[in-house]
Length: 143
Image 1 (cartoon, rainbow, N blue to C red):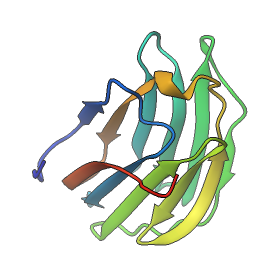
Image 2 (spheres, one colour):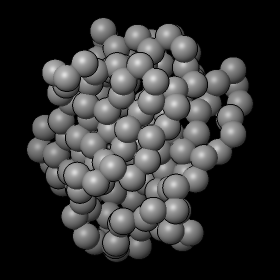
Image 3 (cartoon, rainbow, N blue to C red):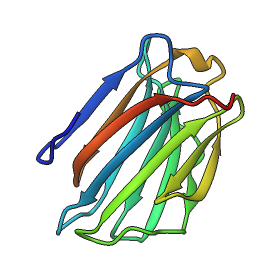
Image 4 (cartoon, one colour):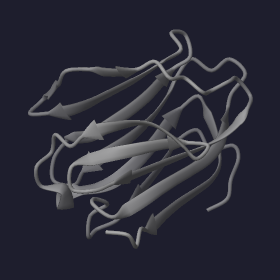
């Protein structure tokens, strides 16, 4: 999938994205970027298993989950490697315990799974102030 002027993107994987799949987003932030989001969504309801949200206004990354109609406890990562209009690569993969987030091949954080049935996590969505150059969902072989 190659495109550069996409405002939002959603992909689904019916057998589930976790554990063992790797999601790789290459893109760059827009000049007036305030935030963008990567959301891992569950298929049967409106749960968000993992909400990854870099906020340029605060130079902070907010992570959370939306379960049973409310947001959980927010986790913040102040390791903020993004610059405006600079290209980046984000890789998010998961094992049975955590989502692992790498930016430009450097691990910046891990996020403990809050959704128990990992197989229900079937969609990934990218929205807001980001220009996507490529997106790849690949099976990881080391699990």
